[in-house]
Image 1: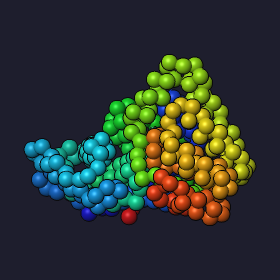
Image 2: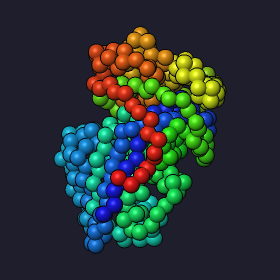
Image 3: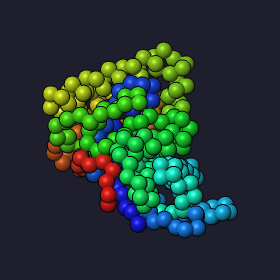
Length: 327
Ligand code: MEV
């Protein structure tokens, strides 16, 4: 039996634009997905999940079709969750040259599903690490990140960047651009998250931005401008200037709104945090619903978010220095 965990993440700057080769800055956060894998001799696959912020579900994949899980969640989220596990298992079998290996997989996750803080990437990175170790193979982080990316790419119909999977695998603060990424030094970041209890449809949101960008010059320019904001943000991190990073996060949220990916509840949470004195606040991830991230050393933003209609949960997020790891 092997257990691995990997952290969730927030985009400090650069979501959506990163899909078109612009840079992005992300921070891994101490909310982890933990995956336990045990090899089984019959070649079958069974997935058990206690949370994923959905009711516990169990799916058995035998020789015949999978039985329908009896859970009360949107079908698209459920299909996505099972798709990620299927593809992660396929990557592990490939990496260990064990095409017929069967597994018992148990997932526990503190990261809400589809909320923009990297639940799928964390589950996938942890699953690949645990399943390959269970088969006696140790992959380095670069290979885990690459294989995890291939999983997201397959499940999200080719509409995924390397941002989420790279951050979850490496931990810390990272810059991702195109096929590459690296860790960057950063000052302490007082991250506060607001969560509206919902989830955006990443595939659709990415496709909508793609279409907008093809139809309008302003949208193509906006994507490029987000890249410029990210470069400014990296300079601010380098200078230890958290205040300027906050200002740039505010600008980035405006640009993402122009691309149509914010929502009423995300805007309400962003403004609640700003009104409470946050240095900056923006949506994180694909948008449409889910989470915002704010920078605030005081407790004011978190308190304000707790009282904001539409905000289901507000919490402080510590930086996860370690990416994927045993346990
Ligand atoms: C999703 O967490 C972030 C997007 O930029 C898509 C991606 O990078 O794969 C919207």
